[in-house]
Image (cartoon, rainbow, N blue to C red; front, side, top):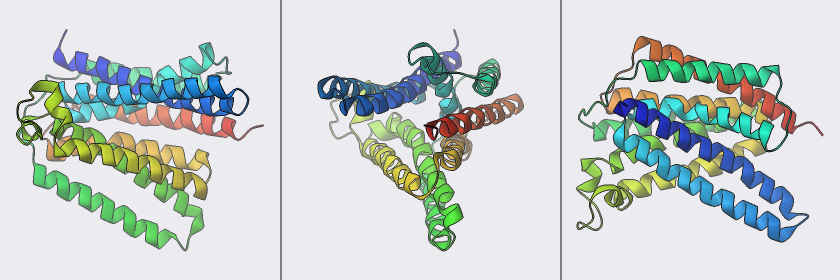
Length: 279
């Protein structure tokens, strides 16, 4: 089995654990109002799941291309849809099944044309410039949209997705020789050094920031408008970063796969957000 295929499987597992754990956290919070102990246990277990998912994704970017791992971010919704059907006994309609099929087709394309990981030079200064440019763009847009409430929630949601999209990129740096060289504890080697350097603090901070900004976005608009904007940036930012800052490449048919994932995510999240508003 090729390294690229192993990376895809690990990334799919990580994003699946992440999305299922996030859904289970909501179940725990809902249950807490009726049965506190059970709700707290479910929520705590799901929170451990989200922590585990971050480590799984870190493993994926440490052995594969950040652009490939980032493109797989939408595939977790496939597992979440099946989880909703089998475990939560929620209705899965034609729209959700269409989204699942699009994501499956995308995963096949991404896997079929994935080459071996490319060990190019990490353009660290360019990564920070890319990050600063994206932040400056969305902060400026946020300020401008304060007078246009109709677009404010979408703008803030997209900003949250952009911040989340940089997590995998800084995870890649933290797991590389660049991160290992400035490990807080020089005696550590391998995976442990990837968790003990300044870039680790950056991606943890970005992950928390993305979550907080997304919560603010939900206060400004409906989920049906926010979630697609968040997801689009969450998936595309690591792909762009991989190409620009990590000197990776994407096969033309992998771009088709990326487009199919974005389409599948849009189909599933639109339906899920609409269902969440129903009594």
